[in-house]
Length: 229
Image 1 (cartoon, rainbow, N blue to C red):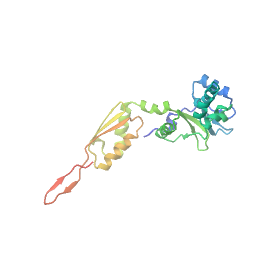
Image 2: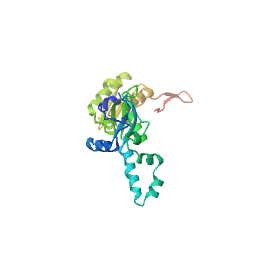
Image 3: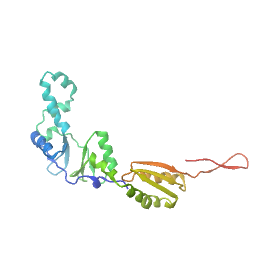
Image 4: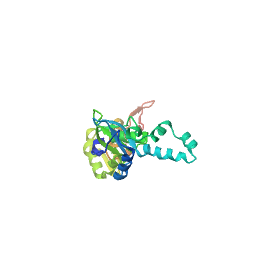
């Protein structure tokens, strides 16, 4: 089964409120060794995220006074210019925040991080309240799973639900799964491989299955077999 966010997230996020000052944020970033904070309202609902990148705009804008204002003003977007003048988390944060829920898959969280170029995502409940944080390191943690654990799941839980396990040979090395055997149909073979790809810790799947071929009626009285798959 695919891991979900609650399996790998940190259940102890460190939020800030919108009125946290720039200096307070900078000090906590340094003290805690993190790269950003979810921003919450009085009900604990996530309203934004403030990161190192959001805060760096102030330093970049400050340097513009040393003969570079024209160049930086042309390069920095209006949002960054606004953040450069910010003094609280509410001023600096990116809003709305990109979030996930505890039941979202780790693959979904990874996709959001990749597409939005984010290092972490707040995890929220159904009401939007902060319940955790998931980072890139948390996402990659699913690949730490032992090869033998992966193989056991394939042979005891995946294949038996679709086919006869004794018809298959499964080898797992460094998270790469090689599957040999002869499934009853092409469709069943493809289903087996697809479910294996979604198992926690699987890096890749190598298809070495021998698919059954249908009978093809050739002109005349002869029946031949053709490869299909």
